[in-house]
Length: 382
Ligand SMILES: [Zn+2]
Image (cartoon, rainbow, N blue to C red; front, top):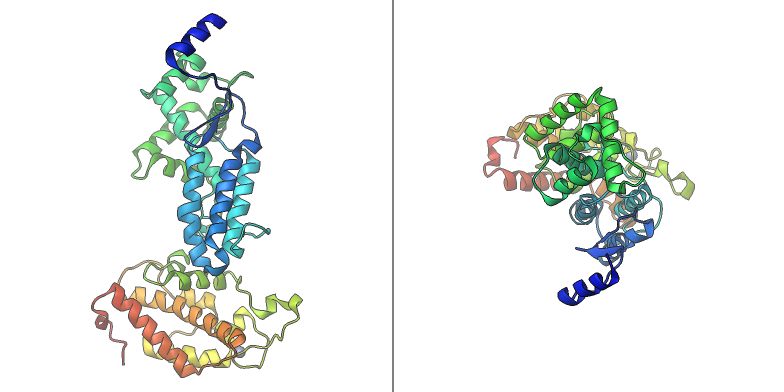
Protein backbone atom coordinates (compact mmCIF):
# COMPACT_ATOMS: atom_id res chain seq x y z
CA UNK A 1 0.00 0.00 0.00
CA UNK A 2 1.40 3.39 -0.96
CA UNK A 3 1.94 6.11 1.64
CA UNK A 4 -0.66 8.30 -0.12
CA UNK A 5 -3.36 5.59 0.05
CA UNK A 6 -2.54 4.95 3.69
CA UNK A 7 -2.81 8.66 4.50
CA UNK A 8 -6.15 8.89 2.65
CA UNK A 9 -7.57 5.92 4.62
CA UNK A 10 -6.43 7.40 7.92
CA UNK A 11 -8.02 10.75 7.12
CA UNK A 12 -11.28 9.12 5.96
CA UNK A 13 -11.63 6.86 9.00
CA UNK A 14 -10.03 9.07 11.68
CA UNK A 15 -8.02 6.04 12.79
CA UNK A 16 -4.47 6.30 14.11
CA UNK A 17 -1.59 4.09 13.02
CA UNK A 18 -0.99 1.39 15.65
CA UNK A 19 1.63 -1.30 16.10
CA UNK A 20 1.83 -4.86 17.40
CA UNK A 21 1.40 -6.05 20.04
CA UNK A 22 -1.80 -4.20 20.98
CA UNK A 23 -4.35 -5.03 23.67
CA UNK A 24 -7.87 -6.20 22.90
CA UNK A 25 -10.25 -7.03 25.77
CA UNK A 26 -7.26 -6.91 28.10
CA UNK A 27 -5.09 -9.47 26.29
CA UNK A 28 -2.12 -8.74 23.98
CA UNK A 29 -2.33 -9.56 20.27
CA UNK A 30 0.63 -10.02 17.96
CA UNK A 31 1.42 -11.83 14.67
CA UNK A 32 4.62 -13.12 16.32
CA UNK A 33 4.99 -15.39 19.32
CA UNK A 34 4.30 -13.34 22.44
CA UNK A 35 7.23 -12.90 24.82
CA UNK A 36 6.87 -14.12 28.39
CA UNK A 37 7.07 -10.48 29.54
CA UNK A 38 3.90 -9.70 27.56
CA UNK A 39 1.91 -11.98 29.86
CA UNK A 40 2.81 -9.80 32.85
CA UNK A 41 -0.70 -8.19 33.00
CA UNK A 42 -2.16 -11.62 33.81
CA UNK A 43 0.51 -12.41 36.41
CA UNK A 44 0.21 -8.95 38.01
CA UNK A 45 -3.56 -9.30 38.17
CA UNK A 46 -3.29 -12.69 39.90
CA UNK A 47 -0.68 -11.39 42.36
CA UNK A 48 -2.57 -8.19 43.19
CA UNK A 49 -5.82 -10.13 43.70
CA UNK A 50 -4.12 -12.51 46.11
CA UNK A 51 -2.47 -9.68 48.04
CA UNK A 52 -5.93 -8.07 48.56
CA UNK A 53 -7.34 -11.29 50.01
CA UNK A 54 -4.97 -11.55 53.01
CA UNK A 55 -4.85 -15.32 52.60
CA UNK A 56 -3.01 -15.81 55.90
CA UNK A 57 -6.33 -15.26 57.66
CA UNK A 58 -8.23 -17.70 55.44
CA UNK A 59 -8.59 -21.42 56.03
CA UNK A 60 -7.26 -23.91 53.47
CA UNK A 61 -10.81 -24.45 52.30
CA UNK A 62 -11.37 -20.70 51.86
CA UNK A 63 -8.15 -20.42 49.83
CA UNK A 64 -9.18 -23.44 47.74
CA UNK A 65 -12.62 -21.96 46.97
CA UNK A 66 -11.07 -18.63 45.92
CA UNK A 67 -8.53 -20.46 43.77
CA UNK A 68 -11.17 -22.51 42.01
CA UNK A 69 -13.63 -19.69 41.43
CA UNK A 70 -11.75 -16.41 41.00
CA UNK A 71 -8.14 -17.16 40.08
CA UNK A 72 -8.91 -19.98 37.68
CA UNK A 73 -11.64 -17.83 36.12
CA UNK A 74 -9.06 -15.16 35.26
CA UNK A 75 -6.63 -17.73 33.88
CA UNK A 76 -9.27 -19.62 31.85
CA UNK A 77 -10.13 -16.42 29.98
CA UNK A 78 -6.53 -16.26 28.69
CA UNK A 79 -6.29 -20.03 28.10
CA UNK A 80 -9.32 -19.91 25.80
CA UNK A 81 -7.63 -17.33 23.57
CA UNK A 82 -4.12 -18.63 22.89
CA UNK A 83 -1.56 -21.22 24.02
CA UNK A 84 0.39 -20.00 27.03
CA UNK A 85 4.17 -20.57 27.18
CA UNK A 86 5.33 -23.28 29.61
CA UNK A 87 7.15 -20.70 31.78
CA UNK A 88 3.92 -18.73 32.26
CA UNK A 89 1.94 -21.89 33.08
CA UNK A 90 4.58 -22.83 35.66
CA UNK A 91 4.50 -19.32 37.11
CA UNK A 92 0.69 -19.37 37.44
CA UNK A 93 0.79 -22.83 39.07
CA UNK A 94 3.45 -21.55 41.49
CA UNK A 95 1.29 -18.52 42.46
CA UNK A 96 -1.77 -20.74 43.00
CA UNK A 97 -0.03 -23.40 45.12
CA UNK A 98 1.74 -20.80 47.28
CA UNK A 99 -1.59 -19.08 47.92
CA UNK A 100 -3.27 -22.35 48.84
CA UNK A 101 -0.65 -23.54 51.30
CA UNK A 102 0.76 -20.30 52.71
CA UNK A 103 -1.81 -17.59 51.89
CA UNK A 104 0.69 -15.43 49.98
CA UNK A 105 2.48 -15.54 46.62
CA UNK A 106 6.06 -16.20 47.71
CA UNK A 107 7.61 -19.54 48.61
CA UNK A 108 7.70 -22.86 46.86
CA UNK A 109 4.89 -25.07 48.08
CA UNK A 110 3.63 -28.26 46.49
CA UNK A 111 -0.02 -28.88 45.60
CA UNK A 112 -2.08 -31.84 44.46
CA UNK A 113 -3.37 -30.77 41.04
CA UNK A 114 -4.76 -34.22 40.27
CA UNK A 115 -8.45 -34.84 39.80
CA UNK A 116 -10.45 -35.84 42.90
CA UNK A 117 -10.87 -39.26 41.28
CA UNK A 118 -7.13 -39.76 41.66
CA UNK A 119 -6.90 -38.41 45.21
CA UNK A 120 -6.20 -34.76 44.37
CA UNK A 121 -8.00 -31.51 45.12
CA UNK A 122 -9.59 -31.25 41.68
CA UNK A 123 -7.72 -28.08 40.69
CA UNK A 124 -7.59 -27.47 36.95
CA UNK A 125 -4.48 -28.69 35.15
CA UNK A 126 -3.72 -25.44 33.32
CA UNK A 127 -1.65 -27.00 30.54
CA UNK A 128 -4.27 -29.67 29.72
CA UNK A 129 -7.06 -27.07 29.80
CA UNK A 130 -5.07 -24.88 27.41
CA UNK A 131 -4.67 -27.83 24.99
CA UNK A 132 -8.37 -28.70 25.25
CA UNK A 133 -9.24 -25.24 23.89
CA UNK A 134 -6.85 -25.87 20.98
CA UNK A 135 -8.66 -29.18 20.37
CA UNK A 136 -11.92 -27.26 20.07
CA UNK A 137 -10.35 -24.92 17.51
CA UNK A 138 -9.09 -27.95 15.55
CA UNK A 139 -12.58 -29.48 15.58
CA UNK A 140 -14.19 -26.25 14.37
CA UNK A 141 -11.61 -26.00 11.58
CA UNK A 142 -12.46 -29.58 10.60
CA UNK A 143 -16.18 -28.70 10.59
CA UNK A 144 -15.49 -25.49 8.61
CA UNK A 145 -17.51 -23.57 11.19
CA UNK A 146 -19.11 -20.51 9.71
CA UNK A 147 -17.19 -17.77 11.50
CA UNK A 148 -14.76 -15.22 10.14
CA UNK A 149 -11.59 -16.70 11.70
CA UNK A 150 -12.27 -20.28 10.59
CA UNK A 151 -13.16 -19.12 7.08
CA UNK A 152 -9.92 -17.10 6.99
CA UNK A 153 -7.92 -20.17 8.14
CA UNK A 154 -9.40 -22.24 5.31
CA UNK A 155 -8.69 -19.53 2.78
CA UNK A 156 -5.23 -18.45 3.96
CA UNK A 157 -3.60 -21.59 5.42
CA UNK A 158 -5.50 -24.57 4.04
CA UNK A 159 -6.50 -23.17 0.63
CA UNK A 160 -9.56 -25.42 0.73
CA UNK A 161 -7.50 -28.53 1.61
CA UNK A 162 -8.28 -30.72 4.64
CA UNK A 163 -6.65 -29.72 7.93
CA UNK A 164 -5.64 -33.38 8.40
CA UNK A 165 -3.27 -33.20 5.41
CA UNK A 166 -1.68 -29.87 6.28
CA UNK A 167 1.77 -29.43 7.81
CA UNK A 168 2.94 -26.17 9.35
CA UNK A 169 5.39 -23.88 7.65
CA UNK A 170 8.07 -21.75 9.23
CA UNK A 171 6.02 -18.64 8.44
CA UNK A 172 2.85 -19.98 10.17
CA UNK A 173 1.58 -18.15 13.24
CA UNK A 174 2.33 -19.63 16.71
CA UNK A 175 -1.36 -20.44 17.22
CA UNK A 176 -1.59 -22.30 13.90
CA UNK A 177 1.61 -24.23 14.69
CA UNK A 178 0.19 -25.23 18.10
CA UNK A 179 -3.07 -26.47 16.52
CA UNK A 180 -1.21 -28.55 13.92
CA UNK A 181 1.19 -29.87 16.55
CA UNK A 182 -1.80 -31.07 18.60
CA UNK A 183 -3.34 -32.61 15.46
CA UNK A 184 -0.10 -34.57 14.79
CA UNK A 185 0.00 -35.74 18.42
CA UNK A 186 -3.60 -36.98 18.29
CA UNK A 187 -3.09 -38.71 14.94
CA UNK A 188 -0.01 -40.48 16.33
CA UNK A 189 -1.88 -41.47 19.51
CA UNK A 190 -5.02 -42.74 17.73
CA UNK A 191 -3.35 -44.31 14.70
CA UNK A 192 -4.87 -42.17 11.94
CA UNK A 193 -6.87 -39.03 11.29
CA UNK A 194 -10.19 -40.89 10.82
CA UNK A 195 -9.81 -42.30 14.35
CA UNK A 196 -9.14 -38.78 15.66
CA UNK A 197 -12.28 -37.52 13.92
CA UNK A 198 -14.40 -40.25 15.53
CA UNK A 199 -12.80 -39.48 18.95
CA UNK A 200 -13.63 -35.80 18.53
CA UNK A 201 -17.14 -36.70 17.36
CA UNK A 202 -17.60 -38.56 20.66
CA UNK A 203 -16.49 -35.45 22.55
CA UNK A 204 -19.12 -33.52 20.58
CA UNK A 205 -21.91 -36.04 21.25
CA UNK A 206 -21.17 -36.45 24.97
CA UNK A 207 -23.46 -34.69 27.46
CA UNK A 208 -20.62 -32.55 28.86
CA UNK A 209 -19.21 -29.59 26.97
CA UNK A 210 -16.72 -30.27 24.16
CA UNK A 211 -13.76 -28.74 26.04
CA UNK A 212 -14.66 -30.67 29.23
CA UNK A 213 -14.56 -33.96 27.31
CA UNK A 214 -11.36 -33.00 25.51
CA UNK A 215 -9.81 -31.97 28.84
CA UNK A 216 -10.75 -35.30 30.42
CA UNK A 217 -9.02 -37.13 27.57
CA UNK A 218 -5.95 -34.90 27.46
CA UNK A 219 -5.19 -34.39 31.15
CA UNK A 220 -2.49 -36.49 32.80
CA UNK A 221 -4.07 -39.32 34.80
CA UNK A 222 -3.00 -41.42 37.75
CA UNK A 223 -4.51 -44.51 39.37
CA UNK A 224 -7.99 -43.79 40.84
CA UNK A 225 -8.59 -43.89 44.59
CA UNK A 226 -11.58 -45.65 46.12
CA UNK A 227 -12.18 -43.06 48.86
CA UNK A 228 -13.03 -39.97 46.78
CA UNK A 229 -16.77 -39.99 47.51
CA UNK A 230 -16.15 -40.71 51.18
CA UNK A 231 -13.67 -37.88 51.72
CA UNK A 232 -15.60 -35.36 49.61
CA UNK A 233 -19.06 -36.26 50.98
CA UNK A 234 -21.38 -33.41 49.91
CA UNK A 235 -23.29 -33.26 53.19
CA UNK A 236 -20.15 -32.83 55.24
CA UNK A 237 -18.58 -29.45 56.05
CA UNK A 238 -15.85 -28.49 53.52
CA UNK A 239 -13.29 -27.95 56.31
CA UNK A 240 -13.98 -31.48 57.64
CA UNK A 241 -13.51 -32.90 54.13
CA UNK A 242 -10.23 -31.03 53.73
CA UNK A 243 -8.78 -32.17 57.09
CA UNK A 244 -9.86 -35.76 56.39
CA UNK A 245 -8.17 -35.57 52.95
CA UNK A 246 -4.93 -34.33 54.54
CA UNK A 247 -5.13 -36.96 57.31
CA UNK A 248 -5.66 -39.82 54.84
CA UNK A 249 -2.63 -38.72 52.85
CA UNK A 250 -0.61 -38.36 56.09
CA UNK A 251 -0.05 -34.67 55.35
CA UNK A 252 -1.25 -33.04 58.58
CA UNK A 253 1.59 -31.42 60.47
CA UNK A 254 1.70 -33.86 63.35
CA UNK A 255 4.68 -33.54 65.71
CA UNK A 256 6.53 -36.52 64.22
CA UNK A 257 6.68 -34.55 60.94
CA UNK A 258 8.09 -31.47 62.71
CA UNK A 259 11.14 -33.03 64.33
CA UNK A 260 13.37 -30.35 62.79
CA UNK A 261 11.59 -27.79 65.02
CA UNK A 262 12.71 -29.74 68.14
CA UNK A 263 9.24 -29.62 69.70
CA UNK A 264 7.94 -31.58 72.65
CA UNK A 265 6.78 -34.56 70.58
CA UNK A 266 4.43 -36.30 73.05
CA UNK A 267 0.73 -36.64 72.27
CA UNK A 268 -1.22 -33.81 73.94
CA UNK A 269 -4.12 -36.10 74.86
CA UNK A 270 -2.42 -39.03 76.58
CA UNK A 271 1.21 -37.81 77.04
CA UNK A 272 2.31 -41.43 76.64
CA UNK A 273 3.89 -41.63 73.20
CA UNK A 274 4.94 -39.52 70.22
CA UNK A 275 2.23 -37.85 68.17
CA UNK A 276 1.75 -39.29 64.68
CA UNK A 277 -1.21 -39.78 62.34
CA UNK A 278 -1.60 -43.43 63.38
CA UNK A 279 -1.48 -42.56 67.08
CA UNK A 280 -3.54 -39.36 67.02
CA UNK A 281 -6.57 -40.71 65.18
CA UNK A 282 -6.83 -44.25 66.57
CA UNK A 283 -4.05 -45.66 68.78
CA UNK A 284 -4.27 -42.95 71.47
CA UNK A 285 -6.11 -44.21 74.57
CA UNK A 286 -7.89 -40.83 75.04
CA UNK A 287 -9.08 -40.88 71.42
CA UNK A 288 -10.06 -44.56 71.70
CA UNK A 289 -12.53 -43.59 74.44
CA UNK A 290 -14.02 -40.96 72.12
CA UNK A 291 -14.27 -43.45 69.24
CA UNK A 292 -15.96 -45.94 71.58
CA UNK A 293 -18.66 -43.40 72.47
CA UNK A 294 -19.20 -42.37 68.84
CA UNK A 295 -19.35 -45.97 67.57
CA UNK A 296 -21.79 -46.92 70.28
CA UNK A 297 -24.01 -43.86 69.52
CA UNK A 298 -23.95 -44.52 65.76
CA UNK A 299 -24.32 -48.29 66.28
CA UNK A 300 -21.14 -49.16 64.40
CA UNK A 301 -19.94 -52.62 65.40
CA UNK A 302 -16.99 -53.24 63.12
CA UNK A 303 -13.38 -53.02 64.32
CA UNK A 304 -11.41 -49.97 63.20
CA UNK A 305 -7.75 -49.41 64.05
CA UNK A 306 -6.68 -46.87 61.43
CA UNK A 307 -8.13 -44.22 59.15
CA UNK A 308 -7.67 -46.56 56.18
CA UNK A 309 -9.65 -49.32 57.87
CA UNK A 310 -12.37 -46.80 58.83
CA UNK A 311 -12.61 -45.66 55.19
CA UNK A 312 -12.61 -49.25 53.90
CA UNK A 313 -15.74 -50.01 55.92
CA UNK A 314 -17.73 -47.15 54.38
CA UNK A 315 -19.78 -47.22 51.20
CA UNK A 316 -18.41 -44.81 48.59
CA UNK A 317 -21.79 -44.49 46.86
CA UNK A 318 -25.34 -44.33 48.15
CA UNK A 319 -27.45 -41.36 49.13
CA UNK A 320 -29.51 -42.87 51.93
CA UNK A 321 -29.50 -41.07 55.26
CA UNK A 322 -27.59 -43.89 56.93
CA UNK A 323 -24.74 -44.07 54.38
CA UNK A 324 -24.41 -40.28 54.24
CA UNK A 325 -24.44 -40.16 58.04
CA UNK A 326 -21.61 -42.67 58.34
CA UNK A 327 -19.50 -40.85 55.73
CA UNK A 328 -19.91 -37.43 57.28
CA UNK A 329 -19.29 -38.76 60.81
CA UNK A 330 -15.76 -39.88 59.85
CA UNK A 331 -14.80 -36.45 58.47
CA UNK A 332 -16.37 -34.71 61.44
CA UNK A 333 -14.61 -36.78 64.11
CA UNK A 334 -11.21 -36.41 62.41
CA UNK A 335 -11.77 -32.65 62.13
CA UNK A 336 -12.81 -32.33 65.80
CA UNK A 337 -9.79 -34.35 66.99
CA UNK A 338 -7.45 -32.17 64.94
CA UNK A 339 -9.13 -28.94 66.12
CA UNK A 340 -9.03 -30.07 69.74
CA UNK A 341 -5.37 -31.02 69.39
CA UNK A 342 -4.57 -27.50 68.05
CA UNK A 343 -6.64 -25.84 70.79
CA UNK A 344 -4.85 -27.82 73.50
CA UNK A 345 -1.39 -26.96 72.11
CA UNK A 346 -1.92 -23.31 71.17
CA UNK A 347 -4.79 -22.33 73.48
CA UNK A 348 -3.34 -24.22 76.47
CA UNK A 349 -6.80 -25.45 77.40
CA UNK A 350 -7.87 -29.08 77.48
CA UNK A 351 -11.34 -30.53 77.27
CA UNK A 352 -12.84 -33.83 78.36
CA UNK A 353 -13.83 -36.76 76.15
CA UNK A 354 -17.47 -36.21 77.15
CA UNK A 355 -17.43 -32.57 76.06
CA UNK A 356 -15.79 -33.41 72.73
CA UNK A 357 -18.34 -36.18 72.18
CA UNK A 358 -21.14 -33.70 72.96
CA UNK A 359 -19.65 -31.26 70.45
CA UNK A 360 -19.61 -34.07 67.87
CA UNK A 361 -23.28 -34.84 68.54
CA UNK A 362 -24.37 -31.19 68.23
CA UNK A 363 -22.45 -30.57 64.99
CA UNK A 364 -23.59 -33.89 63.56
CA UNK A 365 -27.21 -33.13 64.41
CA UNK A 366 -26.95 -29.60 62.96
CA UNK A 367 -25.54 -30.88 59.65
CA UNK A 368 -28.22 -33.56 59.36
CA UNK A 369 -30.98 -31.12 60.23
CA UNK A 370 -29.70 -28.67 57.60
CA UNK A 371 -29.80 -31.34 54.87
CA UNK A 372 -32.64 -33.56 56.03
CA UNK A 373 -35.65 -31.98 57.68
CA UNK A 374 -36.47 -35.26 59.36
CA UNK A 375 -33.16 -36.36 60.90
CA UNK A 376 -35.02 -38.48 63.45
CA UNK A 377 -35.69 -40.92 60.59
CA UNK A 378 -32.40 -42.48 61.60
CA UNK A 379 -32.90 -42.79 65.32
CA UNK A 380 -29.44 -42.32 66.83
CA UNK A 381 -30.23 -39.44 69.11
CA UNK A 382 -30.61 -39.81 72.82
ZN1 LIG B 1 -2.21 -40.01 72.70
